[in-house]
Structure formats: structure tokens, C-alpha cells
Image (cartoon, rainbow, N blue to C red; front, top):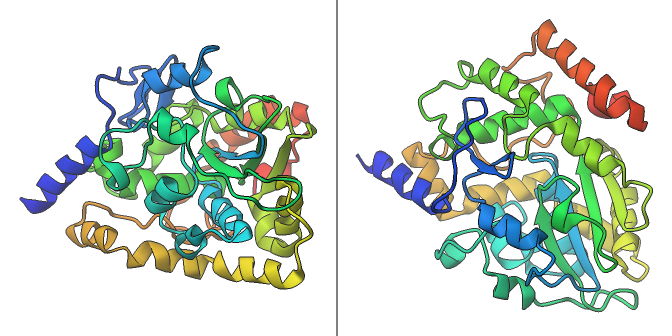
Length: 343
């Protein structure tokens, strides 16, 4: 009975009230935000408030947004930003909930009244978020996280900078399914097996019936801005291959003074996947939820390139052909390299 009660409590804590369920297809428990599928943690009211011309949300000079399609390396990149700024969040970078509450809020998530046991923030809390002086080029650095397509409140505003994190489609998809399966109470997958729910999820993913819609549309929306001065593209695979170079790029982009090689090495060590995984695994609350079976997967799992190939999950020829077709239709015309998307 305890796992059932705990799953019901978490489902309540992870659900914004009075939202319209996503009803345009798919197998997941999602909500409808003006035609875009979204996690039940989001709310249409907050989304409309953020994009409104009269929004109370205050963009400020020095803001840095980490934007991505889900499960593309967002948590890792935020950990790097925390480590570069010397913020304590670097020590617990793998703990998604704690980092979201204390270092890098996600403005699309409303305050549901659970404080540091929840994820969201009030508009007042976001506007009062403390800025950090990180050097002569940025005296008021605030970090924000978003999985939003390039529209609404994450369009260029003359004050913010945007880091877009891109991961290849196959690894993202496998990681995404691990999250959706692992949080069955949240996504409505509690009654399917890991392997048994896979093909339905791949279909939903290909059709865009997953949170924040189609991967290909999302990448396309942001890639159109990659040559803009306020956008930096960070590829998960390049960050794995050459972390020193990419971290230096990030530091320069956000306005830091020259960063010494010893500092770069410290950032690499603080944000290693072993360190982040340990922070996720050490959390007593998360450990209890996994012991109960309510959480069936850790948030930080592997972080490898090519993890899809080493997974128990396999792609059929038809599924790979569909992904190839979507790449050719939506991303190739924009100049997105095939090797960035398809393994």
C-alpha cells in the first residue's frame, strides 16, 4: 500500500491543477499548452503569462538560459555553469530538483506550493533571483533552464544569452524513455514493462506526442538562431569529446574573465558523470522512492555517446528510416550535419 500511496502523493505534487489533458494522440499522460504537449508540471497559465506582452517576468542583463530538448545534457551543462560561477550547486549538480530550486530555475514551472520539495517558483521569486558577479563582462549572472522551443519568452530580448544543448536523436530517445518509464506515476507508464512500452514510445516520439513536441521541430527552431550573437550551440557529443574546449567556450560566452586551465580542470572534475550520479544517488528522498519502486530509473544514468547502441532497447529498420526521413525533411535543409543527429 505504501508505494501506491507515495506514487499518488508524488503525482499530486507533480501536477498543476485544472489543466487540459493532451488528447491529440499518444500513450503518455501530458497536458495541452495551446497546441503543444507538455509535462503535467507545467501550466497553460504560466506559459501565457511568460509570453504575454504585459508579462511580469523580468528579463535582465546577464541572464543565461540553458535550453534543450529534454534529456540532451541540460543537467550537465547547468552543473558546468554552477562550477564556473563557484556556486555550491556544482557539488550536487546531479540532483535535478535541488539544482532547479537553488541555482537554475525553470520559469515554465509554476509554484505549486511545495517550496523546496517541489520544482517551480512564483513570478516574484524568479524576478528576485540573485545575480552573481562572474567578471567584468557580466556582473549580474542568473541561470534559467528551459525545454521550450525557440519562441515566446526564449526569443531574443536584447538582454539574455541562450545556450542550446543538442544531443543525437537515438541517444536522446533512449534516455527519454528511461525517464518516462522511470517516472511512471507522472507519465502514465506505471503499468507497462521497460521493453514492452518501448515501441509505443518511439511512435509517440516520432509523431511529436511527447513533452514539448517533436525533437526535429525543436532542434530546427533553435538551429535557425545558431549564428546569432546571443546563442551558443553546445553539442553533447563534443562536450564529451573535448570538455576543456567547450567549457572555455561557455565561459567566454557568458561573459567571464579569462579562465585558467586549473579552473577548467576543476569544473570537469566537479561535473563528471560519476560525481553527478553520486549526487543523484545520495539523496535520501530519492533513494527511498527507488527502494519503494516508485522511481524506477535514476535521473543521471550513463551520459555516454552511443548509449543507444549498448542498450537493451533496439530500433527497427522502419523506426530508423522514419528518423532519417524526418532529419532530411526538417534539419538537413537548415545545414544540420547528419552525424549530429543520426549515429
